[in-house]
Length: 311
Image (cartoon, rainbow, N blue to C red):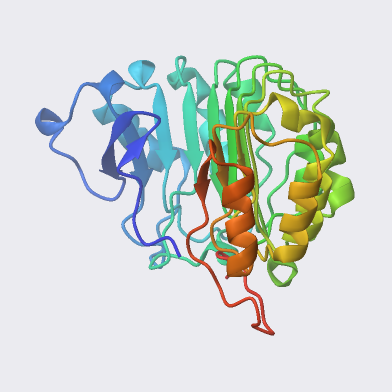
């Protein structure tokens, strides 16, 4: 579970900005030297992220110099309220140099990850063409339509259940500069209905010529994903691979080890797994020069196999 807000984002320290109180502007750091976390104090109050509320941030900080922005808790939207993305893209001219954006730095004490209300994030790419990093937490009502983003290098989705429609949207996008892709696929009970077939265009690598890290994680079908990855063309180009956080068992690991070579990888993350000790030893023996994460081993005989992040 996620209990702590981001303290660092893309190499910059995070400065919280509470939208419900007037800040001491003399104590704020230079606008371009911090990642700004804009949020409400509590999502259970009547306050919500609105264009008027965002004005408070722009009045205190020179947003033309802001390169890294984090949208924290935005409250509970009422019918007819604009989405956080609509609020942000409506103020795009105030952020001409935005390069990194995190949507939904919301922790368990504010709202469980499966309850985080997201929205259609597609307009972000047109509003901020210089965006190099986009991270999104939460999957409820999340949408992504096919786009082309020339400068995007990192794309991450953290979710207890990532909708298959979103996975298919990612697969249909063109990201020529993308180097790092993480998808927390989650559990079907919380909306994670993506299939291995949905991942096929990603695994082919045709639209991702620059990809060097791939994370397909937190899935109840982790064994099937591992089997697909074992034969995926994109793997030969990767420097790091993560298939952790899910219900990976000996079956999936056997398929992985029986597939194409993985010795070229710098790191392989299989943490939170259901493999036996003997299979873990086989992984270590087969990949002696690869940095392995086999931590958080679960009981392979457990009848119920849980992903690391769901509700």
